[in-house]
Image 1: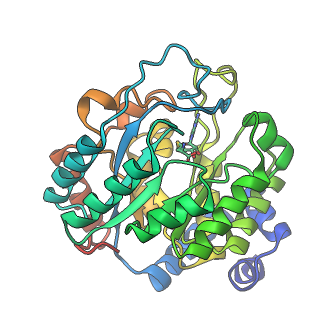
Image 2: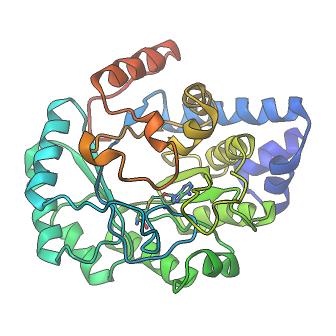
Image 3: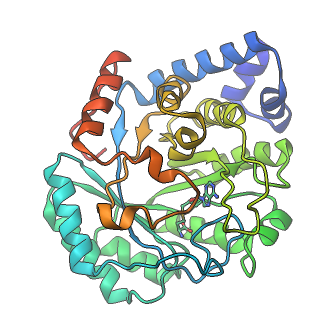
Length: 338
Ligand code: SAH
C-alpha cells in the first residue's frame, strides 16, 4: 500500500491508479487523502487561488448529450453578453479584488475574432490580472491571436479519454481533435487546463485511470474534474449522477500523480454533495476555488446541469465565507494573479 502510494507519486501507472479508484478499505483511502494533502502543501503551498468566472453566452453550436446548453435543448432562454458588457463586468470583478478572470461560454459562433481580441485586450488593460479563456475549440491561428492579445490561460476539458464514449456523448466531435487543440494551446504558450466528468454513463474506472495518465502526458497546468450531474432536459436525463466519493479519489490521485497542477474544488461537487464539499476538496488536494460572478440576470440561464444555481457564490458574503474557510484551514488567499 505504501509502495503503491510512493509509486503513484514517482511513476504512476494504470494499475495503481485503478487500485485507489476501487479500494473499499477506508484506512487506505484516508492515507490517500492525507498524502494528497501533503503533496499539495509541498508542491503548490498553502495559497488558495480564486478564479472568478463570467459565463458570457449560453448559445452553443454543439449537441453534447450531457450538457443543458446543447443546441438541441429548445427549452433554454438564450443570452449573449455584448463585448463591452463583458469588459465592464470584468472591471467590476477586478474592483472586488479578484485577480484571475475566467471567461466561459457555449461555442457561440456569433462572436468574431475581432470581438474576442477586443474583449481580451480591454480586460488585460484593467490591471494586473490573469485572463483565462474557456470558449471551446478554435483553430491554432485563433488561439495564437488570443495569446498575442494578452490571454494567459485556456481551459478545454477533454471530458473523457475513451474515444468511443467521447463520440457517443459529443455527436460530430472527435477526441483526437480536442486533444490536438490542447497540444496547440501548449505549443503557443498558454497555461492549459483540461478535465473530465467523473461518472459519465458508460465510463469505466479504467478509462478514468487513462484520463489521469493523459493529463500527465499532455503536461496540463490545471485539471478540473467534477461529477457528472444528469440534466433532465438532455438525452442523459435518466442517467445516474457521478459519485462524490469517486470524484474525491480522482482529485487526490491527480494531486499525487501531477504534483504542481492547479486543482479546483469544483462546483459540480458542491452541487451534489453540499457546501461541506469545498472544505473536503481543499483538504484532499485542491488549491483553487472558482466563484461564479456572472451577472445575476444571466446566471440562472447558464444551466449546464440542474441546481448549479443553488451553489451560486458570487456575492460579497461568499467572499467572506471563503476567507473564513481558508483561514480555518491555515491557508490564505493571495492577492496576486497566480
Ligand atoms: N463550451 C466550453 C465550456 C463548456 S461548459 C468548452 O467546451 O470548453 C464547462 C464544462 O462543464 C464542460 O467542459 C463539462 O466538463 C462540464 N459539464 C457539462 N455538462 C455537465 C454535466 N451535465 N454535469 C457535470 N459537468 C458538466
